[in-house]
Image (tube, rainbow over all chains, first blue to last red; front, side, top):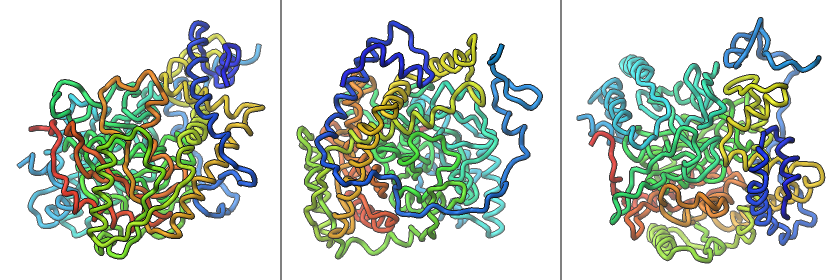
Length: 95
Length: 494
């Protein structure tokens, strides 16, 4: 499975990582090598095999739907690169 | 006196403190000096000597009052993947610049609750992605071991818990926490001649540990003896309602489980771990291990784990997929680095381009691709089915055996910069550790011998889910037989 430049650009956009034009080609090569290597999984017969969704056998726990934490806006914002008046700030989204 | 103190194990230091041979403050002072002395290895990212001495003074009070916990007064290093309240937590990444958590991870809270003293935060591969500790934004970690005939080449300590391994091996911490996603505790333990235990998935809480691949990540102890691994695991483990995959099971007295030996135990030897091109010295060490366990009264049984050869490929779909999702949170808004952009979108893209290193980007992109529309079934779903097959292989094997013996890694520590051009060559380091990770099983690496180059090599014991006791008992038997007492070239403060 080899990826072309356009596909790498699309994935990079989905992953929200800026990749400069000149890096797309080498990156396509690297990613293709890894994808070619994982192709070997096609050899494994997995007909009727359920995908592993739980690592240890356990049933998900239930809990009451109630507030257990909160009232700590200062803590939440303590590490924000930019915060104002109790809010995160970001570049303007709407005109 | 001070090098005597840093040369102790957790068990002997605990006993010395109890007898009053020295205080925790004395023990900690010796280690604070060792942390300074170990700087050339770049094992620590953040040193916390004041905090350590404060914690030690509190420990001395509790010891005097007869209220000592299981790790009381014992100075340890914390992998910089665990959030520590008020102390810089980096995950080895530029993107977490300046991040001071406002909360404590459950594992570190448990350890500190048991009296452990924190010396500082230790280096790791960025977001725990790597097998050589070469990808940290804070620089590579050097292995305290050198080749017998080549004292110049700097070797890697393995990864991702490379700082933990180097600090413990160089006597700059009595023990350290590690995390293991595909081998990140066991492989560096093997490379540095120490003990590393990855518990069963669900044994230690993941809450407050920076996430890499949530269905694989598991914290565990890195120590200089099997007994120490038992002591420290007991203090780290336990049910945590804040982690939805934490298992609500009592924590056994692991130290008490060490006695009893392997007499009557059935030990499986997986045929499929005999890989093409595996160095003869690894095979020889494995045979030696088989001989030791047999000599101690275990029954050796050949077993099949037929899907072993597919484990790495499945891992390199599942782990990047989960990483791409987990790392979506680093967006320049809530914590860490922000690189400006004209729009919100540009700000995200610039922040993540500058904040993530090359290997992390590579894995996030692979993960994004295999989860993207049209490819999910072919890659992620297929890999999760293969993972079921691998787990099934182990389940079948454990119908016949109590534990499995295998090498930890296919080679000894290599030079810094080697294997960097070919990601797959680097990934092959984890060929023997990844299967147990995919199946969520407990596994330990014990130093068992030296390579022809004079470097440590580990043997691995893999056990049934939540049967760390059998794993530890078998490991103890290997440890006794191997009697590994060679020291690394670099010992802090010597």
